Image 1 (cartoon, rainbow, N blue to C red):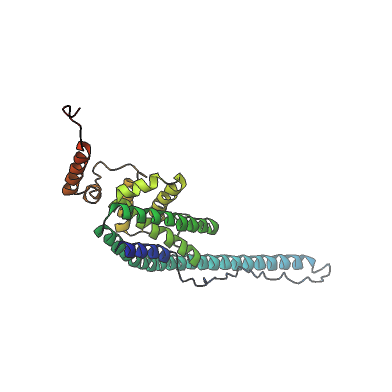
Image 2 (cartoon, helix red, strand yellow):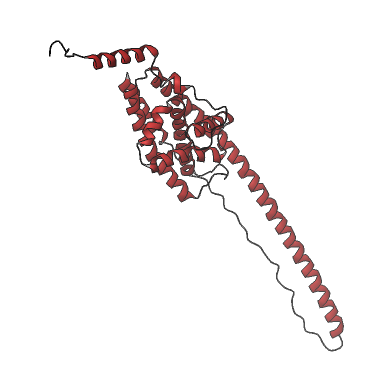
Length: 280
């Protein structure tokens, strides 16, 4: 049973990093501006010079007015085009984010089943080994995804991206961050113990995934709250006065009968065979 769960959890983490990538569509924008040509020169004699100057001045004024009007129309058209493209981009980002959240919820369903099964078959030593290996694997995939986002120039607070590689990297971080949060909340003692024995960079990167996920604004309200609780359990942020993690007792604390057996075994070990004063 434990071996099967171990395999399922490992495959789950590998599945988080596998995505179908499609070529992103690019839009070309033409910013060309056509400027009308200037008026023609004329040959005039001395008698007509004054009238010609007035006529030429009037022609230039009309031409300049026409040119300015066309420039204004072109600028207005470009502004309208820019506004339309920004509106289209906003709609695209909202639609892509909606799809992302649906896929994220499907993945979270798998996470829930895996963690639930792990808790139902809880054995401290075996569970510790599983969690320890999972955290190591998470550090690798989250680190790779983080490097991708740095290369792509994505930062929290930006709109949901259109680039598939950037989307994939965000998904890796949010999904692994959510699973890490599950572990911290449902198996806190084991998670803390495992993190304490790893290099600080491992712990820092895993905790970074929690903060990053919240800062993106891509989480639904339910998961935003879950990440908030995980951040408190992991001491990323101060704990609320009423913060209580019931799993620290319900899951980690051995049942009373097991405690009693350990006490009796310890007492028997201490008692052992003794040599009396009479025998001496």
